Image (cartoon, rainbow, N blue to C red):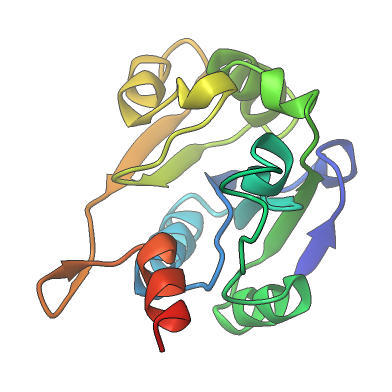
Amino acid sequence: MKVFRSFEEAKGIKNPVVTTGSFDGVHIGHKTIIRRLKMLADKHNGESVLITFYPHPRKILYPDTAGKDLKLINSQEEKLELLRKAGLDNVIIIEFTREFSTITSEQFVRDYLYSVLKSKVVVVGFNHHFGFNKEGDYKQLWGWREKYNFDAEEIPEQEVQHETVSSTKIRQAISEG
């Protein structure tokens, strides 16, 4: 697995099939997305790409509230090892800053997924939001398919014992013992 620290470093990935998010914990929901990425990368004779952020966006956006005592499920090193074991081809780690948080969802798609990476397919989870104030979602991605020359897929929610899997719920369960 190749690890890049910027979009520019990652230029030239062959027919990228992309997902984006924090991927804290690399849980069953994340693994479902990764399996689909790999399947689509094979179909498009391309490579799987996961874009993630460091530090966790909540630590930057809400340093005095939600990010203050945020305990991540895995360290950055553990997360990378789990992603490697999952069989990803590429991981792009973007430094999450206040400035980066002001990028709109369309700017993110246009400037990075389209212009730099030339993504073939963008895969997201059912509750994925991105861009300034979490304005972007799957419906927007679907609407931009022709304009930015990619396909878009949404992975449905994953459940364990009738409970929707999420990093937030996992962190809460860990903290409660």
